[in-house]
Length: 219
Image (cartoon, rainbow, N blue to C red; front, top):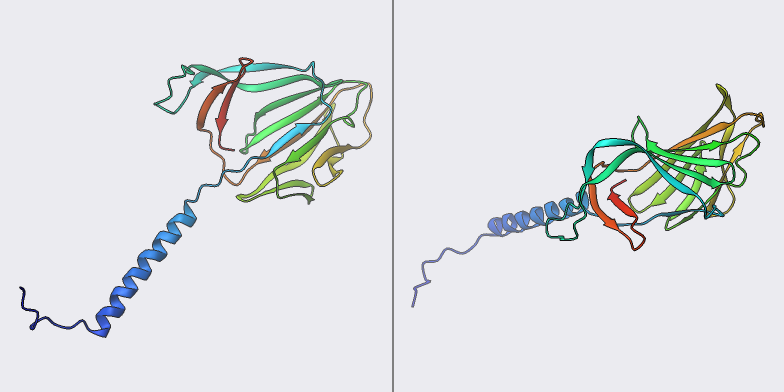
């Protein structure tokens, strides 16, 4: 049996010091969790009324490939080619849509409207967002991680800039408004998208039942 008669009592200052260290450790843990908190949230954009006959053309094959980053996946999804541009032909009558990376960061999509057509049919339906709003010409898509921003479109026809912008039709539907154009010539509506966090590293690769390949990345 140990003799505890000579044990020194813990002072009030030592108790406060221990409590302070415990509080500091808890605060540090909370700050770490807040700083590095991972939020998974899906925003789905649908092209309302888009044609079922639209075709996709990859353009500008890259020198590098994509593959599953999960070393334990034995699905054989590797060496998937990358491209600098995806073109959706005839997404709407007389309208092709190009997807590329924007030089300022983010993703750019361009509506190529052919002669004799207009952009009135092009409408986007959003689900999963907290709110949609158009502010200073930019479309803000509110999410728990911050706003995804579709920057105000720049519309060009034969080297001349045409007035254009987003128009909010409802709480989840967006279209474009475009000024007077020459029906004999094509024109391009050119918005681009940025997100609170952008990363070009692919997170995963998958193939669906129709043999379509999907590369999952952080936006």
